[in-house]
Picture 1 (cartoon, one colour):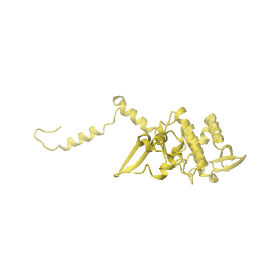
Picture 2 (cartoon, one colour):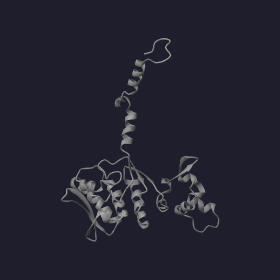
Picture 3 (cartoon, rainbow, N blue to C red):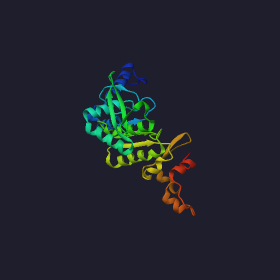
Picture 4 (cartoon, rainbow, N blue to C red):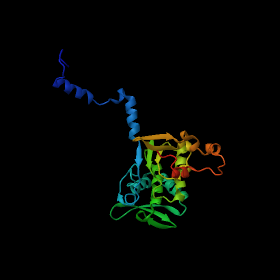
Length: 255
């Protein structure tokens, strides 16, 4: 409400403006906004911290995933074992396939009422507190497939950290498999010169900073400098084509 000829809103006007702006969006009236909000709410972004958080025992509780830093790994596996034993067995089986020395996974409740995680190697239970960071990361990645409510998108920050170079291929194999069988989209950031070599070129994007801005380009847009098949035609007399890892080390994609 504003009086004729009045150049500034009254206190009542300002109150009404604030009231109107603060009205909630009633879902049936805003279906697209509601759908967008639900989509964003289902996204999860992980940065595993295997030095302490993934090793620590935790209270017995029912959880829907392993925690954004992996801190609920033991509790999540214990939840699956109790309520979804088949999913727990699938994770255990996948772990054995990826790491042949692993016989299985144990989760036990201590006298203090905390869930402790063990991985059996050659029938010897190894507590999480002394497992390698790479083993914990691999287990964390596999445990995500047992989430009660799979997110529509998962973001991983450098999943190769602490993983032996020979096992990075296992991470790539997992990501390739999820492309075909999973309902979750994975976005992975990496500084590894190895991981990009093991993934389809159509899934790769180069991120770089230029003029204080971040530019993200599809790997295919790099043309002859980026694709191996184009390098065959573009570089005469080159017997072996440089893989993505060598081009990263050389700085081809730096801004």
